[in-house]
Length: 492
Image 1 (cartoon, rainbow, N blue to C red):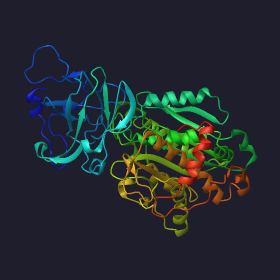
Image 2 (cartoon, rainbow, N blue to C red):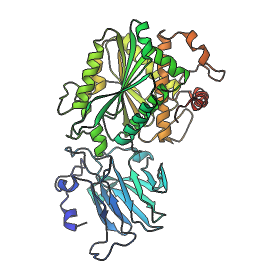
Image 3 (cartoon, rainbow, N blue to C red):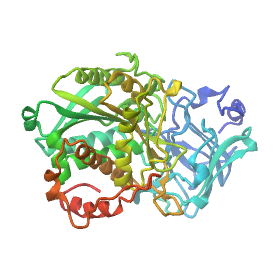
Image 4 (cartoon, helix red, strand yellow):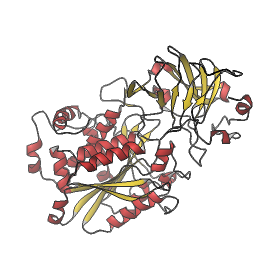
């Protein structure tokens, strides 16, 4: 890259924000060939070609440091320079056995799971399954060459000249992937699944709403319980989509627990609240630079159309006497903590406080990666515009509103000494465990009677309790059900 371009960027050591030269990072690099300074001949093998002009891509700039080292700059969220975390880019024209060090130099966050062993994910043309880089090849440190900003460096050896390599902050889950998944669900013509377009984003992408329930049962009960789940309000938090898909896969399966739940509960799911942000490769914001999870109190139909549509629907359902809106769960991913855990609201009445703790305690028993000790209940002023806080104030005292968080990196199970890195499959497994926990909850509240459950209990499945610190002993149950789910078409 031009030296004068490099010198035009001045970095603020405290915040990592870029004062000048911000225009350099407005767009993604597009088939950018990075050759040695002064080189004028034909491009050679080993002159790396970087690209992020694809769906959910993010890489704003590349500086050549040496033949073996490159500085990478994350493009800030559109219309909001504050957020620089998500990256997703390809590298091609590599030389076989070429060893490189990539330095991601302009993270907007200082705290990161990279301090605790997290590593980026990689795949290539000939190896299309994402895998994490070895933690020993990843370094996270304050760099004197970058005004003591935090830098994440990783070493990599390219081994196949014809491959295109792709690197990302975490496993990507794009808008297109969601659309293909929902279309495949629709093609199954399930009588208990309805997909509808709730609205459109600013860039006219679909805001999808799924309803999963046994529609024929509605008239037989005076009031049906309703669970509302949303995900991807923060577009860079891709693990939320895998959890959401796990929930959906379980609820539409032929697993006996899923069948019972569909008879008693209406599930409404918005899998992607911020489709524009996801498509653009943003970390936290929408196309117009808004953190949508701070605008629930008064969303604008033109600036926050997806949020506006979801809020209208929830308010409308809350006023419907034929249903009882009992749960709102918003799914996120966390950049500094391990395990899955929840945030809930703070109430004055002790009984309501205790009732709100029931679901996370039950989830702790079903999911060995869910931590009740990390679960907390708060009323921070800064969180007032979130879905959990706003809807917690709007809905009545029989409703429970949670943020479900999952680590971008790993989880610790009971008795383990080393963190277990999450995979796409284990994120989806957590989603399945969230879904099945509703059976335990409604069994406790006597909506679902014990005698209904007798035919789904197997000898291996025994009642058990979590250990109270979040590392529940749900392994036996999960193993037994895993075999049953495989035989009944639940995706793993």
